[in-house]
Image (tube, helix red, strand yellow):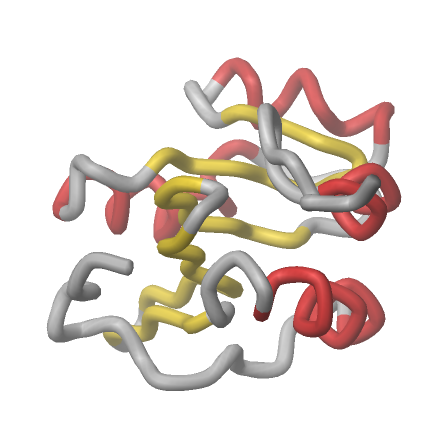
Length: 122
């Protein structure tokens, strides 16, 4: 695993979608421990850097506005080696995609990781 930027925290911070954050940890640990990024007032729910690649992840439940992805997009602007990923409900994917972030339903992420990931099963 490569070195993370200095401003990335050591452990995943609680998210508004606590179940996703908790469920992500066991699967993600084998592919790089989830971390977080916070620079008040900006915050990204999870940062992954491992065999799945480099991802900055924001978890959104229900409807949200594109401006709410500002912290995620700011992190990936500063750290261009990371790709933005929004875990959200299917009906909210278009909002994130218009902002330039990849999207994935959180259920799919819990079962298989980020887009293009292999879980090492079977």
